Every structure is written in C-alpha cells, then in structure tokens.
Image (cartoon, rainbow, N blue to C red):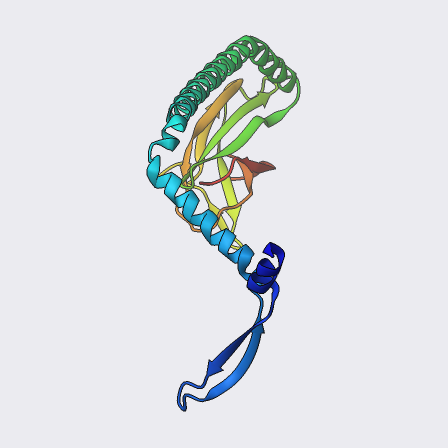
Length: 239
C-alpha cells in the first residue's frame, strides 16, 4: 500500500493544464512527475537552513578574529623590519661611497708627487731641444659656458735667454667658420714670456649654441709668426 501511495504521489504522471492569458482557454497540457522537483526542494531547504544558522549564530566568525589580528601584527612587523633593512642598506651605501671618495682622494694625493716628477722630467727633456714646445696641453668643458685650458710651454736651448709670444685656441663651427676663444680680453690670444718654462691655465668663455669636440692650439712668437700648432680634443661633455 505504501509503495502504491508513493508511486501515485511522486512517480505517477500528473496532468498540468496551462491556460491562455487572454482567452482563458486551455493552451497546453503537460504531464509532470513530482519526483523531478525533489532536488529543487532539497536545495531550497538547505539554503534556508544555512541562512538560519547564520542568523542564529551571528558571532560564529568571531573565532577567526584573533587569527586575523595576529596575521596583521606579523605583517606590520615584517614591514617595519623591511624598512629598517632598507635604511641600513642606504647607510651602508653612503658609507661605501664616502670610503671610495676618500680612497680616490688618497690615491690622487699619493700620485701627485709622481706626476710632478714626470712633469719635471718632461720639461728637462724638452729643454734639451730647440724652440718652444707645448707640453701637457688639455682643454675641458666646464658646463656649457666655458672651457678650461691647461698648457705648459717650454723653451728649448739657452739662446735667446727670453722668448715671448702668445697662444691662441681656435674652434671651427659646423659651417666651417673659425672662432678664436677669448683667452685675453684685449687680443683673444694669451701672451707669454718665458726663460725656461711657464704654466698657462685659465677659463675661456663660450657664448655659442654649438659645441665643438676639438680645438686647435697655436703658438706665435712676438712678431706673430706661427711657431707650432696642435689639435686638442675637448674633454667632458657640455651640460
């Protein structure tokens, strides 16, 4: 008997008549079995049961709060340790940079005597020759508005006792025009008078919007006659 009742309730097809919304007449006949709707009913019932448990126990998730707070504290501690490590690394980098600068300065001071000795040896060697010679010539950009020059002029031989003249630095523009740097405000050339040797150092202003890579150094005697000429590469980069 029970099986028959269950069969009639859940398995036996039941006729479902759908009426037309406008005419009210039967539009479609469907045969349905209630057993097909059991999973849907169970799913709905389970959902309501779960929601009911949540509302009955609103503090159920509070057990996770201590773990969350602990993880948050650990995260903050790790961030603080990371910041301290970065600060220590920056300090070590600064100390290393300072040490490198000190070592460079010490090496430079240690090399100065040998550089001076080599310079004197070059001067003595040039003194054995004849005429005027240009030694240790260098030109360097200082920003983009001036050029530092550094020359050593040596007079070879003993006669004449004194030699006078001038030095000129000439740049060539992209258009091929020659421009003489103002080493002296009056003449542009830098005058000299030497008995054995002399050092010529200074800054030459640069007021042009183009920047040469090389300069031509020319030495003249007191009569304006060219004695020697040398091409110099400008060190550094105009900024």
